[in-house]
Length: 280
Ligand code: AMP
Image (tube, rainbow, N blue to C red; front, side, top):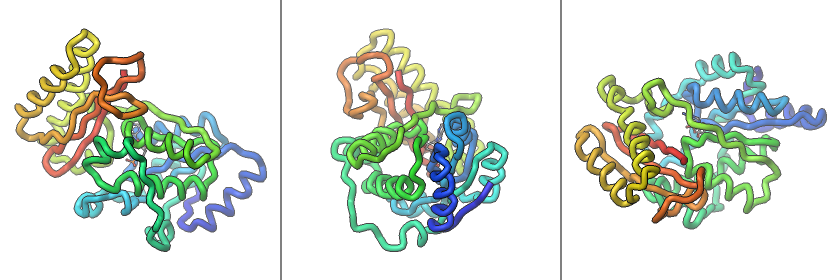
């Protein structure tokens, strides 16, 4: 497995693959890899000859300096995991390599970014949109793999691909969880033992809320009940709990077709902000 740190060397490698008409899959990550990331590598390997994983903690998508500073960076371990998973090459650029000049362009995703993560993290999706566009232009993948764990990111990238005519297929992969239901996340490493023990409440409340909705309970009542449950768990500070349409991300007043509804949540557990969702 090759590890590239410069755009030029990665492009040279990919030029050869493109000449040989080998399909390329791209998995953009911020590293501190876990089984969730590896599931995206597996999905890419099943469909492409070449699988490229980028590992880049993109500063322009962080709106919280402490979150950026404390974001785990474990490139050596990441490379071992990727090699074992059969990844073809890693792209791990420096900030200067990725952003030689601060981008002047701003990407505004409209109503897709005025809610949930976008509302809580101003500028986040502009940073994501710019860096993912750069990865698409550098790697020129046939397919790009993203996790449903970041549901709003998926909606934004879907829009990016349509609006900028990127010639690639977006593949959305299911959320991989620990055995107790907690969605795997690089940020879980920052949880204390006690916080880690109660973190699965997020998924439990998501699952029970979904059951209540499917049983016909009113959406507002389900939201209120979830808010009350979090209020009773003093370690958590709920940021948002929303029942939305998966594509528009707008709050819904009644449950739509199977697969079009999502419950999305963000909550602080101590200093760590966790997000999760269920689609149904
Ligand atoms: P990140 O390194 O957090 O930026 O994530 C890189 C990619 O992995 C994104 O497309 C995420 O949605 C995806 N991902 C993160 N956690 C999981 C998970 N638990 N299951 C599946 N995909 C995930």
